[in-house]
Image 1 (cartoon, rainbow, N blue to C red):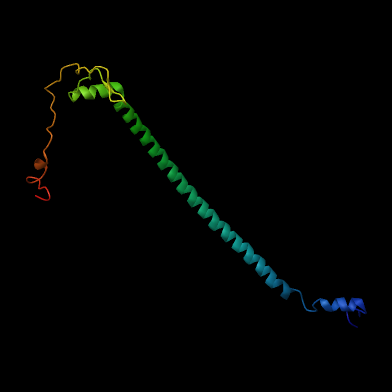
Image 2 (image 1 turned 90 degrees about the vertical axis):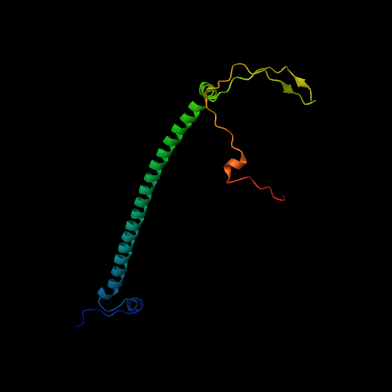
Length: 149
């Protein structure tokens, strides 16, 4: 006697749709596919995580560099503010032998002079060394040639 009962009609047609052999052979490719997909997914996650970590290190370096440059900019701005303060400008002008100007006169749009100009107050110091203005001949080996002469 056979271990399987005989099927008739509709049950027999449905039974023909299922394979008669063992089910292990059909499962092996599926299990292999699932293992490959999971392994590929893990490798992709590892690569993505490494790229994100590298980006985070670069971002940290750039932020540190930005902070250093910002500190340098602020220090330079403090120096500029100190040099452009009115007291510092006045002191430097006096060191260069400059004196305060007199009363100004203004030229109006119609060509008339408004105000009475006055001379500069104060005495110019002569002990301050002012470098001489160099003539064009002094900056070259000899007299400057003018084209067309």
